[in-house]
Image 1 (cartoon, rainbow, N blue to C red):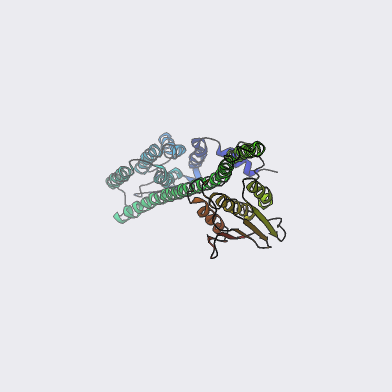
Image 2: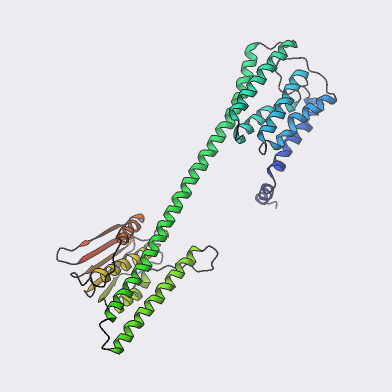
Length: 384
């Protein structure tokens, strides 16, 4: 079975001149057929002359330059116009004289510079051609010349419209590409914020606590080991994220999900934050990116608890439903901030954008009775 798609792909690999040549060759060969002699475009209505050696040159001059109509549109237009003028003056009128509109359309699309000069030059040449034909005894009335000029202008206008459409499409794609790059930079910034802030905050809190354990070597060694483990975990997570950004890296592309909440909570406990995790319902098999966002919501909330309410009881409540995942992270009171690194305020804002991008709801603020509450409702089944 013939694979036409494969043939088209192979054909597109050839140079544009090679791909444009067949049309000009076919037009030249067909123009030499006796049955089609005198069937071309006629301006001036001069009596048709029989084919001779000069007619072959005129046919070649009008048809073969079409091979470079996209590579060198100005050269093509000049040669075809010259051949068309000779054809009308010598009155051969082969089928190749119909190449003029194709040359005009191609020039209107692909001509980069001197477009106004080309229009003025072609107009002047056409007026000169009309004068010469009239001197040779052409019976064409003035309105006939005007109608044909409008037809040529229409062909140029088609090319100009196609060029404008291509430029507009290229501009649209450029804007889409810029928007995509901007969104990707924002996503990378969020990932870096989530990974780095959580681990570094835990390391700062653990290191601050270790300062008060100099009298208890066993506990000090455990605290420093926890700092070391957290730092290694941060490096591993950063490497994993950078691997995901490398298209040539062979990776499974795994991202955190709600199933990793137990490990996240346990690491937060090791940093000195009393955390209780409560889960309801069964995790859906195809929750999409909802589980990833759920993990990030809990991670950011626990990071803020370590920063601003260190040592205060924190409760993480996650409820899995058929259509959504509900998350609530509450912290009692306000703990010590002596070990808290400064925050940029981007974490909660980034979470709100993530949740709302999936069609969910997000809120974060102080509770009436004291403490802080982060809540999110994340629709399940959204594509990653």
